[in-house]
Every structure is written in structure tokens, then in C-alpha cells.
Image (tube, rainbow, N blue to C red):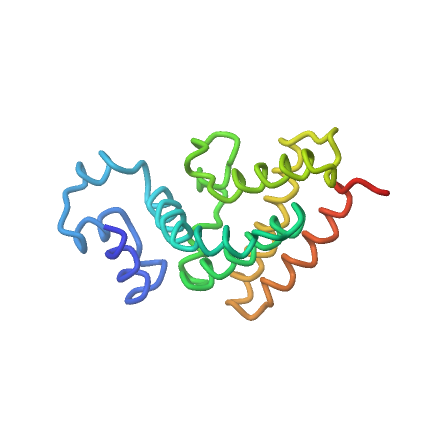
Length: 183
């Protein structure tokens, strides 16, 4: 089914992506589709999570000797790679207010690979004494999600003609510096 989604977007563009088109391309009934997913946005979110998981070992290995803030910035560099691999047209279907995957407060934690890791890194930083201990993690997740979503949204608007990796890194560096313990 995921391959069908990618084929449809590549062949017909995001406007051609519908539950019916996915089912026809994958050779499934709509009942089978709705047994697995709630909407086409749900499939898109699942695809991105699946794609990002391919990078997970590389993220962990490349983060080994980094500070908590650097680890957060690093994971978002890999997320941008994942999104660029999917393409701006595919990502345009993801970045809609109707997409339940963007509401991290109401999705299962297992679907939030990146924000789960971000919190894990920040807790490690607190334990190491490099990240402030008074953080409101819900606020931190919101601000980081807004940074990444905002940059990627405009990456889609400008059809990939924006340095998303550089912009996310710059904005995260600025924000994360406010979370660090000042010596």
C-alpha cells in the first residue's frame, strides 16, 4: 500500500492521491484500507514514520558523542533527509491542518519517533547537567514542532527551493540555547 501511495504521487501528483486511488493501485478494497488506516493523511504519516525508521540506526550512531542540544539538531537533519527523499509534493499532502499526525498531543507515542527521541535526549541532558531541569516538555515539544513544521511547510510552498536543513538547524540552535544550563 505504501508503494502504491508513492507511485500515485509520482505519476499523478498529490491531487491524484485519494483512498480510492490508493486501493485501486494496491489492489485492495476500501474496507481493507479503513481496517488499517483512518485516512489518506494517516497513510502518509505512516509512510514517513516508516521511512524515518530506516535512518534510526544512523541517527543513533552519529549522535554518540554529541551534547543533548546537538543530538536534537542532528535528528532533525535526518528528518529533513527523509522529507526531501519523499519530495515536496508528497510532503504537501502531509502538511495540512486536517492531518492528525501533526497533532502530537493526540497521536500514539509510537507514531512520534522524532519527538520521543527529542525528549529522551533532553532528559539525558538534564541528567548530565547541560539542560535546565525546569522544562515543561509539552511546551518544548510544541516549540520544536512549530520550528520544524514551519520550515518544512515553507519548503513545500517554495517547492523545495529553500535550505530546509540549514534553516531548521539555525532555528533549533537558537531555541535550544535557551534550554541549556548557563555557566
